[in-house]
Image 1 (tube, rainbow, N blue to C red):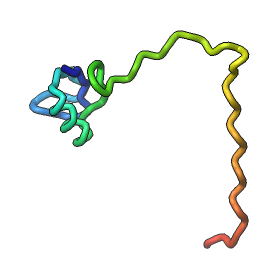
Image 2: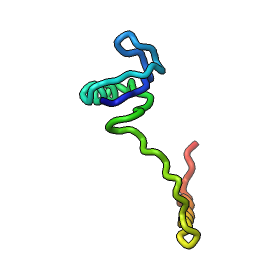
Image 3: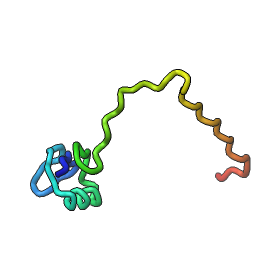
Length: 75
């Protein structure tokens, strides 16, 4: 069963409280925007990996953005 941290009041529990819920309750709470974080279970954030990127596979540089086309300015 997933453990969540509440973002808003729910069933008498204050925001920030940790709560164990069923999968159905998790879906309902997510729909209503009452979840601050999912600690474990479906939808939990995966742990960041500690493996480093090899030097020969450096991250690609982002492409430069195109400037917006010049046109009439609204006043």
